[in-house]
Length: 160
Image (cartoon, rainbow, N blue to C red):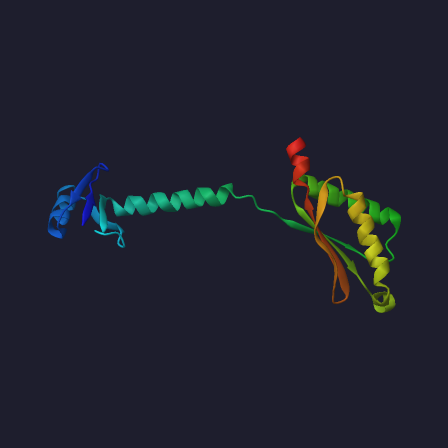
């Protein structure tokens, strides 16, 4: 097997007994790092410390990930213009923060027979928010509702 010692120096090809003796003298572990190589590669290291450092790096990587929240706005086909304006204002604020916005139009009773009204309302919302968002998921019908998902416009952040 090929051995890499505790200092990171390549010791060359040694026997298993020789590698174990070197690891024992250094009070460290012998770890096989590349079993499929020819000959297999082993390293003398503190395995507990290695595992701890790897977990610590994974935690740091998870912290650095951006978490995108999906906020939702619920409307009805009969929603008034005033109500629509303050819902759009909330959506704009969320999009500027970097969240996605799901716009859902809920149908009740016979409203479901007029999907073109809901489609027009969703287009109006998309047009009002076109400067800060892009349509990620086009308007589609799901059961008794119609929905569309807006994502923050990446070009806007690049300009800022």
